[in-house]
Each structure stands twice: as C-alpha cells, then as structure tokens.
Length: 308
Ligand code: AMP
Image (cartoon, rainbow, N blue to C red; front, side, top):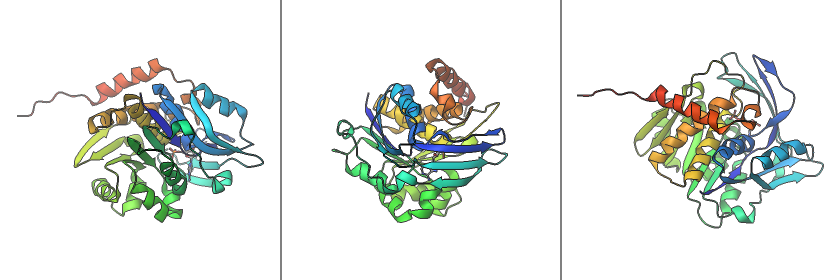
C-alpha cells in the first residue's frame, strides 16, 4: 500500500442542472479526488487552502474519510475558492458562471513532512505554479506523478502549465481540453503530441463516452457506465482521477496493465458521483455498491469473439 498526496481546490460550488439548483455546497477538485481515493483505504493527504468561511462539518467529513488535512491551510478572514456552473440539457457541456480564486490567489502550498515521500502524487486542478511547487517539495521523485487540469489554466497560465507537464508521468484531461492543448482534432494525434510534451501516459476523458488510455502506441478504452439518470456531472472528472490515483497508490504497481484497471476503477467511481448533487453520493458510498458496479463494467465490456 503506497501513500497518496493530493493537491487541488477545496471549494464552494453553486451548480445548476436541468434538474435543480444548489446554493454554495462542498466542491473542489481535491475534495472529489480525496473522497474517491478513500474507497481504497489508502493513506492520503490533501494540500490546499480555504478561508475561515469554510464550515467545520466539511473539514470533519474529510477527516472521517481518513484524509490527512494538516496541509489544508485555513486563512483567517479569507474567502474560500468559489466556482459556479450551469449545465446544458445534454449534461455533457456546461458554462462556467463564476470562478473566484479568493484565497487561492496567493496560496503557497506546504507539503506535510510525513507526505514528502509519497509514492503517488495527484496534482488536481489548480494553478500550475502550485502544482510545480508541490513537485519541488518532494524529498525523492515519486513513483508516479499524475496531473489533471482544465481550460481555465490553459487560457490564463499556459507557459506555467507547459512547464509542469514536462515533469509528470500521466495527464488526465478531457477531450475538448486535449484538442485545445494540442490544436489537433483527432484524439490519437492529440495524445501523440502530449506524449512529446512529457507524459508517458495520456488519459483522455470523454464524459458519458468513457475514457481512453494511451501509452507507447497502445490504446485502451473504458466505457462510462450507461446510467438511467445523470443528475449532476460536477466532479466526475476529479472523481475519475481520484479513483485512478487511489487504485494505483493502493496497489503500488505502476505498469500499463495495472493502469487499465485504474481507468476502470476511475470510471466506476465517477458513475456514482454524477447521481447526486456535488459530493453527496460519494460521502456515503459503500464498498459493496462499488463492487457490484465493477461486475456490471465487466459484463458491459467482455466478449468472446473468434478471429481466424
Ligand atoms: P469537474 O467537473 O471534474 O471538471 O470538476 C469540477 C470541480 O472543479 C468543482 O468542484 C470546482 O470547484 C472545481 N473547479 C472549477 N473550476 C476550477 C479551476 N479553474 N481550478 C480548479 N478547480 C476548479
């Protein structure tokens, strides 16, 4: 069992979907990643920042999931990062209504001493300079560094982002962002270009159409589980990344073959996350439910065809 270090936003989200609307609720990339990774009982810590407007209940929830929050700074008099988004009817696309960095704007991350030797580092979505600073604080090169990002950082901090990308092993990115980053429409071409930027492994997330893993000319595909109802896709990408990173940290085996399983675990957990608003579904998710759905994934994808 390896150690997992997570960096990313811990946030307030206000979400609007065709099914309803929320006020400020718990969100943030690191939050979703941590909740997903906690399914694997891995030793994990979050490095992030919030203001003192952040409720104690939310902190308690993270601690109850065995996530170390000694690297989660609470800024006195500060306001927590806030994001607001509105989904279109297809639920695959959304408009960002607000991104207020607040305390994130001048955050200097400090990795807790006992996590400087983490095996897996999951750099969740936030400013690339913060992601880079976390890499620089590690006492030895982690076995695996995974990075997730989004168009906001490509639009505003591209040179810094390109610098971090040089230092990582795996990038998880959605299809539109892969196209934006590379200028290539074909995802195969986009993955090839991203390999040239640094990462040996490229995971392209395609929302309800699953995810692709690229490595040394090989491609593996994991579907998303077809669901009766998708309620709120917020955090699906982060939940995927948390499942992926959590599984790899728990199994401590960094190979292409094991990464295929990690992609399936990520997709499986993401299928739960979208069933309720925000983090609600992930807060009480049981191991038995997770395993049941893994069986569904198997039957969805297994076939026995004879090729002469
Ligand atoms: P996802 O739906 O996986 O893209 O993740 C949505 C989560 O990312 C929300 O909980 C937001 O709080 C968080 N988020 C939105 N915009 C950003 C941003 N620019 N940087 C970091 N986190 C963000």
